[in-house]
Length: 206
Image (cartoon, rainbow, N blue to C red):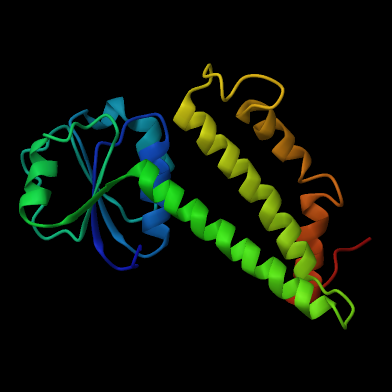
């Protein structure tokens, strides 16, 4: 479980996006994030730029001046081996350690369960009443959730893996997921309904 406000150390940033997404998610959730990578800042410029303004502490170019002690969680990049000094130090200090993909899968599972719970509640409330704007929230949430699930599957398997290729592979599911933001009312329409009927915002000029 992720508890906001903890001190989190990300070991390895890279340029492929996985650690960037984790760092962004944790920082926005209220965690105090430190990122360390042996590569210098100029080699990680695109990743650092994506995390600009989130209050993240970057320790780039070396690991020597970073200690695992004092952190509540260590997130290891897949490129960082299990026998890395910081990973071993975290284990010795009994600090919780995980990887970006574990956090991603946990987050997706939580999102899926929340959408399922909303769907059950919507069905129960609609049995004896007129369906409300919660339907738009579920519709939009599921469409975007499906995109994230299929994108994660492709990242796990690899773009050329058999489970990704083919008419019924994750590659197809990924492309099909984008049609879900159009079918039954575009994502923009669903957001307008939520804004007007749930948040009480004024209608856009027609």
